[in-house]
Image 1 (spheres, one colour):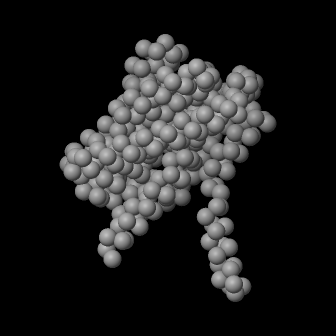
Image 2: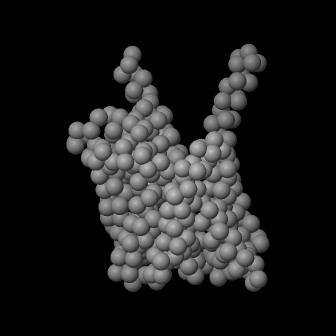
Image 3: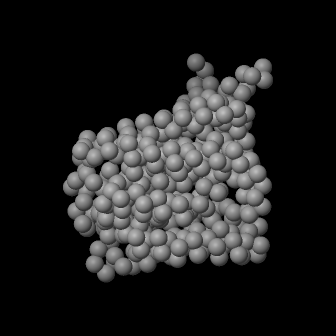
Amino acid sequence: MPARPFAETLRRHASAFRADPFLVGLIGAVILAMILPARGAAAPVARDAVFAAVALLFFLYGARLSPAAVVAGLSHWRLQGLVFFSTFVLFPCIGLAVTAVTRPYLPPALNLGLFYLCLLPSTVQSSIAFTAIAGGNVPAALCSASVSNLLGIVVTPLLAAVFLEARGVGFNASGIRDIALQLLLPFVAGQAVRPLIGNWLSRHGALTSFVDRGSILLIVYAAFSEGMVAGIWTQLTPLNFMLILIVDFLILVLVLATTAFLSRRLGFSRQDEIAIVFCGSKKSMAAGIPMANILFAGQGAGMILLPVMLFHQIQLFACAALARRYARERSRSWE
């Protein structure tokens, strides 16, 4: 093989396996928490920093979300209803069944984390990106993902209150009030000032991306620090870790298959099916981590968040492959 084609092939293969910087950052935050956890006087400083970062994050979410886009997308009510069903009905039902099976094999915090994962809203960025790559209905995906995140601020804590209290889990009911103050109030404030700063934020996407990812890294560090100080990580074994990976993957596959099946049975177009599959199968780590930090305060949120963080990575890899498959099928249909 000539030197140049070989070098180009090597570069293509190397880029395919290039580490995601955000994933590297998450791993780094966990390692830092293990080596230098926030303890003593540093602990309240970390908590205050997390509060400020999360409030800023949801303020920016509110300032970026266009109410007009949400209203326009809601007109496709059948599609939005199926995505809502998948996110807030199908997923919780699967979570109830799965955690009933895994309860004897996992520490309580990990089992709780699996169920909490199933209560979360959909992602925004990756749902829209994968829908676009696959050739799906992007405006509908934009609306579904945005509305899911907006509703999740209210629906996820309410589902947690109903299901976790019924199961006797130590749920922090005052967390619903704290979510209103820390998440919903900044979001509404962001919506209020959107006419003033919305266009500026659109032109400076790097700023919102920095706050988005930076706040999550800070929350992960604080949550895992709390776990280290409390000694909860002595409960985690390699077998527990592998079981969480396998269960996360099976949950994702089941939801992907169910949303695709229902989309076809209900007569949706191929473009709508793609939007439903990608928006209805995602779970938002960006929304889930801040809410867990509030809802499960003092309960070792680091262990509870592990299934969420692993699911986030699994869904990115699996849905990237699925989006490429949809795109190939679409290109063949044009030939």
